[in-house]
Length: 474
Image (cartoon, rainbow, N blue to C red; front, side, top):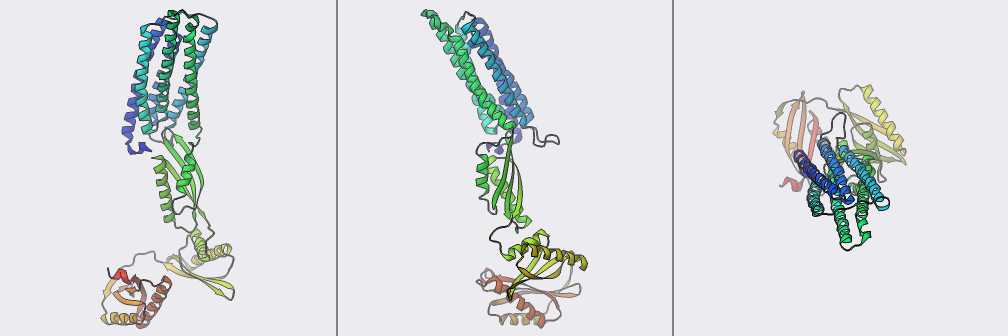
């Protein structure tokens, strides 16, 4: 939406300025029409004066509504004050219908029961011509600002004044026909004035029906036509979204509020789900400008899930990090082994209860599993301080020679030996061939760790970082 490109201060200033100008113009035109209508006894002009008088009331209501509707949300109005604009348009609709009733009543009396002498004068044509010029100018100004900031109240005012141009033209035609009837002695043309007033009423009814439909839809939170399907189509293209399950849209003033639920694969992480939600929100903003968007991510199982996926989904449900998941077929029975990381300060009894609950969940959701063996690991909860870095050239050379025994290994480098809590930690980088599959990379890492610890039994832990050969040459 275009209004998102402008500051709140600029929007408020422009909306209030054009609404104030509309009030000033309405006062001038109403007084002018009323004076000339009383002078000429023209029902067409009197109906236009009444129409303009109600437009003045509507313009004042519009000015008040745009002053209130732009206020930010507060504790009592958590969706903002935008509905004031919709209510303002609703009031304008009621005022227009009242205009119609009076015009039709008076026209009926003049056509069938009473005779009123019409005195067309140059002033009648002047006031109606001036009214058309003013209505044309202010309707353009109102529509420009209404389109710019998507303001229903200003749209209603602009629509009023565009139809005023047509109704004023009809009144001018009626007066011209009355003058022609007198000049050429055609008595029935004298009735052209109340007939013209009925045409004005018809135009007002048409305007009122359009405004009524728009304002009632807004007040009842009806979804704008076509917007829901457009949102579903665009959000469905967001990577990671399986399905758009629900979309609810409401509009208050010039701002949309969108509440939607999207289904995601149940094994995605919280961070990944949040990233998808942000992309969904950005997609809706491209469609609806500065909309207020609430995204509910719903986890769903997908048909392509493997046993590994279902095991990890169970771990996510239980909020337990797992790794080294191994699934084996032992004589037709599925055996699963996995490592679970738990806080190092947790007692064995509590840790075992967590693991037991996880295994029960896995068995429930993966019934084909025959047995499960879980290795409990402590997850560090404190930052360890390295006591010293140790230099051992002989050990470095030994580790490099071990690496040469593996055809997949190109070299061993960046060897670091450090003492932490009186324990020796070894870390190094190992360059391997680019095309090596990860399964083989893991096997080589494991074999190297075993060989390194056999060569240096004093090592407490060995950490190997694999690198592709191409990356190592950069």
